[in-house]
Amino acid sequence: MAGRGRPRAFDRDTALRRAMEVFWTQGYEATSMTDLTSAMGIASPSLYAAFGSKEALFREAVTLYDATEGAPMAQALTELPSARDAVEAVLRWNARAYTAEGSPSGCMIVLAATNCSPANAPVRDHLATWRKAGARLTARRLDRAVQEGELPADTDTEAMAAFYTTVIQGMSVQARDGATGADLDRTVDRAMAAWEVVAMPATARPTAAAARPEPADDRSKPADDRSAPATTRPASSTA
Amino acid sequence: MAGRGRPRAFDRDTALRRAMEVFWTQGYEATSMTDLTSAMGIASPSLYAAFGSKEALFREAVTLYDATEGAPMAQALTELPSARDAVEAVLRWNARAYTAEGSPSGCMIVLAATNCSPANAPVRDHLATWRKAGARLTARRLDRAVQEGELPADTDTEAMAAFYTTVIQGMSVQARDGATGADLDRTVDRAMAAWEVVAMPATARPTAAAARPEPADDRSKPADDRSAPATTRPASSTA
DNA sequence: ATGTTTCTGTGTCGACCGGCACAGAATTAT
DNA sequence: ATAATTCTGTGCCGGTCGACACAGAAACAT
Image 1 (cartoon, rainbow over the protein chains, first blue to last red):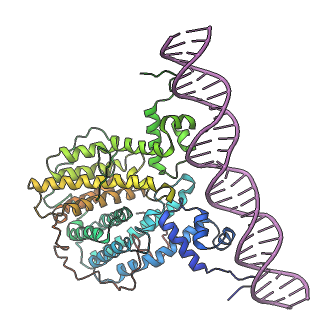
Image 2: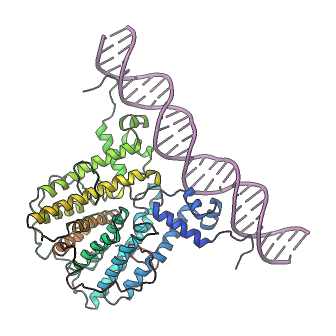
Image 3: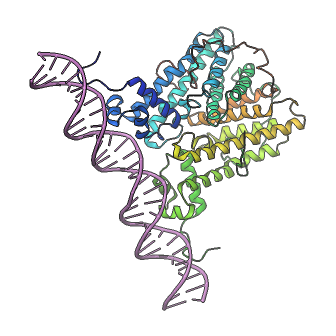
């Protein structure tokens, strides 16, 4: 198995796993070569010889993350008999995984490169592609549920998958902000309780008792907004 | 109004707005002093004289962001007569704001410092505090709705606010990944259609036809997971 | 034993980072 | 006019970034 020359003095898989943890915690740009080499226990020339570059190492780390952390999700989506159980399994699993002790909080694919400099745009796009692949996998599972009669024939499966993907990605931010597994479970409770109304057709509007006219706020100007309001300074805030 | 010495040759508010846009687009760490000075049209000594440091400038930019982009949200939350209309107004507003042309996509407070090096942890915590303040403002609005009889007395307002906060934060990620305003609106449709089931009491479990036993997937190991599964490489993916 | 190959550690490269010293320019106060 | 004050632009600081040259060490083949 060993090649011709001097054998490698470190375990490549172990070093890659260490690198994944650092990237997972700090993100791509915020992780320096010094962070990597000290975590992996090797010098930078060994890193370059084994992985090529910092970016190539990151891509390998993402692939490893998907293989180890994401594999059970793909399995649940394809093997569980009902789409509802499959989506709930994904949400419950993530609620625990994002808050598990011994590993960084939140999802690496969501959090590791949300913002970066133009020079590293390829890295950001790489993760975005992976995120979209996950949403698409969910949409295909919902399509199957429509074919099997589990969901109404006119279900907007793309929008439904986008909704649950949005919830999952928001959960990553919540976990990074200190939400507990129980906190995320309460959000999952609500997302799953809404299953029937979320499975609405493409043409429908809010449904239920929600045939509202419009947001009703003063359309002062088409300016932008942020996630939630706070006129004054944040102060302490415990929740 | 002018002081004693040589007057400032640039407009401080304009320069701050430019800085906000750069931080909004690239995030805190990925934005260099060169990025800032070129966008603001001033040299670095002027920046330091006017704002103190890169971090102080960022905090001022966040405050400006909240005052300009977030103020309508706080207004909707406090002034609209029903909590349901208020929350929907916030969601609809954000769906448009996150995807508006002429400004960066997504929410600055969610995206500008999700991951950063330990040295910049104070910046990350600063934004996290702001995010939590928004969630708390929503929770207080829901408390008022309970007091006014709009929501059941046993409503878990904290969990309900956390749910909608999670959706909003997920929408920021979606917008960054290229989702359109119509895409986000479809998610808002579903989040609002679920209003009644989301307003569930603290003790309740999934409700509806969702009294499931457990996720039911093979509990292979307590490892973590990511946002969505993808066994193979991402490939192209258009949605 | 000798050559070939491959990995390891030291040291360092040019570029850029955030931040600031310094001198000159522009204003007000006297 | 002259002094005092404040801003502006040039240039540079020490430190760190990602990346690699180089020589020595450790395995193989012959």
